[in-house]
Length: 401
Ligand SMILES: [Zn+2]
Image (cartoon, rainbow, N blue to C red; front, side, top):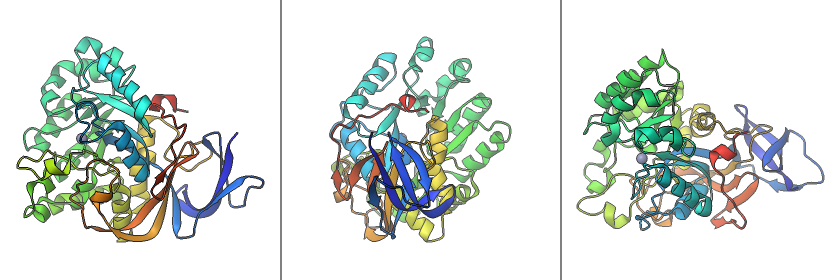
């Protein structure tokens, strides 16, 4: 039995406390203000903070026919360096995941190659395969081109987990309305990367009658507006949904602070730097290594509420997945990120572990750097070094309780 204690400042039940966390058999066995005796100790410096590791519901680990952009291996290393230990992968791979057969293949590939725990999404399969595909996938993801299917699939998917990319052309709000008119009584409906203030208001009005509707947001829609980047190369603002206005940024941030937003995700969407700087840059950014530092920076500036932000990064996605992660509490899996809260630096995408060495946040001054990542009681990342011998990733359904 591998047991040890982590001793330092930790975020426990809404408070930062000095404590010792006893880890045994992948889980938090006990938390105490006093030391545990006769166990190995990992002492954490007083400038560092122990947080629950992040759970990211929206990543694109590419691989397959897009290995030049990212692989499951490099994507999961980027996750660990950013303090993320659990991810949900998106299905717009090449080929796209839209059948039981490809869903099974994706899971096999994650089991072989991933250094983080994982689940997957699937695009809509033929309607008669839907019950079957849910044995393998966490949720169905409807992209813009899939949205018209919702009308026919409605009765089949109302009791299933559904994720939508709500966009008709450039119009998010109309797509949000269309989805809600059809799936207002869904048992589990998550809106990916909501970017417009009107969208939040509309979803909020439906949610008064149905609490099973969730909103996720991304750091680029929180902190970047089109106006800030329009003078730059198009690669810097090419993302779906497109960057909106500063008013939209403020609405998202206020909604996080009020507890209206459920999840902050990376939408880690890697492309090579050459592609992003080409005439036709593909949409999306690699955010896994910068989400937590960006959030901590805006918390320190007094813009984001600490507790509400951490909840959107940890506890809320964990509850959505139905797993015992996302909190530092007895019985929960010992997944932690230890952050140097005093480290001040500039974002430098050339140093990313992701294959995608490009970021619209390049040069941003941030405060707070993930320095140690622990997954199920195992230190897997420390100050630029990975310790991955004998690491075996698990599917979210294997780590439920
Ligand atoms: Zn995405």
